[in-house]
Image 1 (spheres, rainbow, N blue to C red):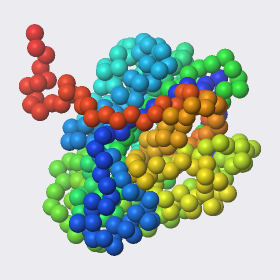
Image 2 (cartoon, rainbow, N blue to C red):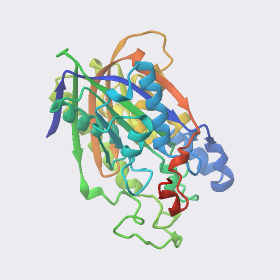
Image 3 (cartoon, one colour):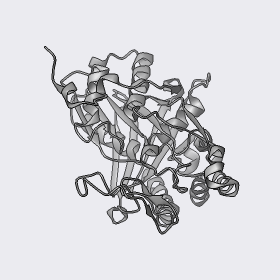
Length: 370
């Protein structure tokens, strides 16, 4: 069992940003028909989502969130000893987007920076990785930046995905403390046998120059090899059985019950799945913030988006105990528990800015000008 427990490390703050562009789910009625869209909204709970512009990335949104968080906390970029970017939506195939964020934020050269390629479980795995680094080093403060722009890889007429995804960037600040009661626990699992359940088959180094011919797939949706494929039945089965098992094992390992938690910040897969998970684990659904209706499925940023939505504008300052859970593409599952002061939870920011310097449309832009 890959169970992790870290003392003297706390979650010192979270923030997120979403694009300003709103997409109403009802706007798809002209494409898919009234009945299909109404049925989709009832099942998933998605009534509206946010989408980035052509050249905006989740690192742009993560940058805005990180800037706001560091400013709120009064922390200089020079104090950050590690930055991990955990996402399936990098700025480039290479280099790692973490280096771009290091440069933009002004984080020192002494810091450790790298990417981890993960989607829906990115927050939990990112936390666990950074906490492990901090636990065995002299690093006192670190950032985990997560998020995805999954909508960019969806074929426009794919009914299974076109209306589902929202886009966001989020950041978490971890900090070493002298208080032994500051504790983070995490349980992580992986099942590579499901690597085909959610996949973009083309564009990687297995099939770099994949055909972009449009194919009618067995589920009745058109796609190319450069688009997202989701095997709905397999994903549903995995979430309904494996995720509740993960939660129950975590509760057993930590000797806790659902009543010990104030908030369940779960990956916003879809509304029906979340209700089923809550029912199977006896989690009070009222303590599970839902943001699907306004922001869609925001992948690895889901948990932070949900926390910022519920507590970001709350004037009542208190310490809450959070269970966060991410599950999906990989297949990867992760669950974590931590405490956070609601004063360290920032509201959701809207942003349309892009990193103009990073927009390279001609190779000659790469040469340094003297």
